[in-house]
Length: 152
Length: 83
Image 1 (cartoon, each protein chain N blue to C red):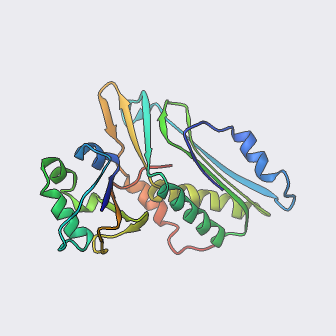
Image 2 (image 1 turned 180 degrees about the vertical axis):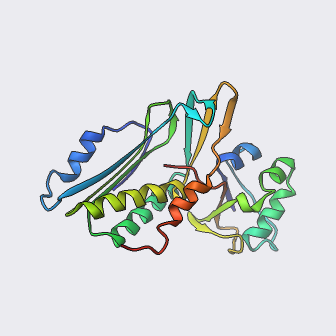
């Protein structure tokens, strides 16, 4: 399931909703991304997340389908926020369920790596020195390409 | 043609989107971008380095050689930084 939303989410509520009625699930993997208060050596007071309404959801759906085709999963949940966020705020939740832990943990890792470089979001950080767009990092690109053609 | 700009492409050009009618000889993304760059300094700077520009046509990722027509929604943006 894909949710692109401005409002915050409750991790506990979201995780238990995924497993409540499915007792073949033996494991759940989960990643929560948060806004940090530092970018390099710069102090951050706010982060604004821009997205491409319509296409962002479509692209996330494709990423979800890729995970479902690679691992035996019972469920996938991606919640990604947009709008203005403060340090400490939750940005993203990725959760996966499976019969066993390997598929749940690996697919969760895969999803957040692909989200970083393939999901249609752009971050702008604000601090004392003004506003600046976050630059895409080679490290994130390497992390995503690690999964290229790498079915389990 | 509906054009959309995101991230620093948007802030550099100064608008989030516009509807334009490129001349008939504009048939792919590369020639479209070259044509846009002639619209002004803000476009020229935003689209100067094509290695940092990503493209979507009708909400599907595309490359610079992809064909475009006047019916299309074309989005230009920098590499994504989500997650």
